Length: 372
Image (cartoon, rainbow, N blue to C red):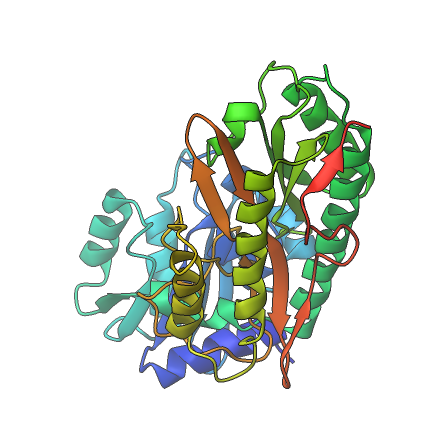
């Protein structure tokens, strides 16, 4: 029996009236095949492709140096390897689609990712086929996680939640942002992460949305923001905590109370049937009623194979919450040149409501005091 992910994709393909579904991007190929081909992430001249067609056809195309690994780890039993120096992978793809019997069919393919030269060659080889974009199909299928995916997100999320607390307890005045980043990295990798990104901003740098750590020394009175984005088994975590070195000021406490209040108001809506635009408007209205203009034009985003997936929690999306949608909420308010406030946690919609994936180990309901 095909893997659950392949069944979901094939069902969505048929429901949309497509005869074949072709993925070429790192995230969609990895999602489909169940593992990351190493050179897909590091060599743009090599192609890694997955193909589903009709009721049964399923194949993966890889460069020949990745053939043995793909045969060992891929969900596809039909692995087709090509020589990057003597073969055009677009021809290998055309041959596979011809074998699948869809040369005159509607082929959903990643037109927003596929190199133009590959598309031109594929059109030459399959002139009667209709090529249509598949971005929305993949977004929709990936948005509804399997139980296996939710379990992976819980695992990497719990690690990240724990590490955030451990690191904050180690911060002292005089440490540099880079030193904090190194502690995060060591703890995350020791905890089983395959990779990660880190943001650390202190003092006025906490007011920079994407604050890569620098040699700036942490000082008493600084607001500190740490954001940890882990990678475990090709699934991501995204957790942000805001702290103060010493006691927070009245202004800082007031701002934070408003940020947390907006989050709690939104939590009350987290259940199947809630429209994403209603969630976003609740957030914006809560902040504006208290004289804070949200910095971002979204409250959060889906999370899974990539950090940012659908649904984006904003008023431009017409998504309705369903069980097994995983996402973050991240109230964020930047005061450039002064300080910034940001809390981010991961959640999953359940049949009756929601469950937090993070936020139980290292809560941030109040500004965390560090440096004692």
